[in-house]
Image (tube, rainbow, N blue to C red; front, side, top):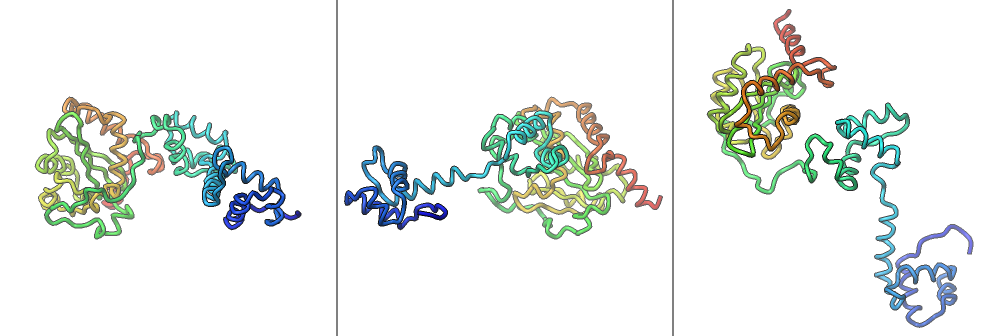
Length: 327
């Protein structure tokens, strides 16, 4: 028999099952299938039931396909060196995205996607979840939740109608709002992030209510001039029902994410992730003083950001205000 070896087909396994049941010898089966008898012997040994008592073609086919999938499964991180590189950088506090992009710089010719790193962590090295910023036990899928419903927010305008200039971050004055809640009690924190400069304003709430949220936003944005106030993007929480009064008093417009699509206001979501370094999820927010809130806000606004070419949010805001005023 010459030529390249090919795997047994389902039809060949059917023939093997029939001939084997008729007590045909290995050599006899091999001749009829034009195969080497070692191929038949290996097939019977590997894909028969225990002790070769029974050979069923459909079961043999299933075992063969399962074995092929396992042996041909693509490794998430293809080499020992890359796995060690990823693990060491995770322990330094790097995100999977930073690791993936830095790898091609540090190791010429090597590359891996940040998605592969996440899959590697959650499928093979769950102990490394500890080094992720979010540290979710299970990866969360984006999309509509099982309890989808439309919130009754008056005069709600969808984010789908938001002007393109907001999406492109071509001006200052477009804000995103979100609320950090406490697991211990009703206390919460309102967080506002300006989309272009990433400037962040933080106010403590004794309760997560529409009235307190409205007051917090008015106090936060009221001290800024008109060129710094254009739009606010919210999620669909009931604490945002007072958006209409905020718009009237500050001469702004409001837009809302699609239900359960809070990731559509990713700037403030990312900012809350940074705040969680100071105030982890189990923190009792009722015990956090105004001095701590001010310190966190100051740290955020004077921290150089990669997305700002390593300028601080305050520096970017002042430059943009100067341009807007024609200075």
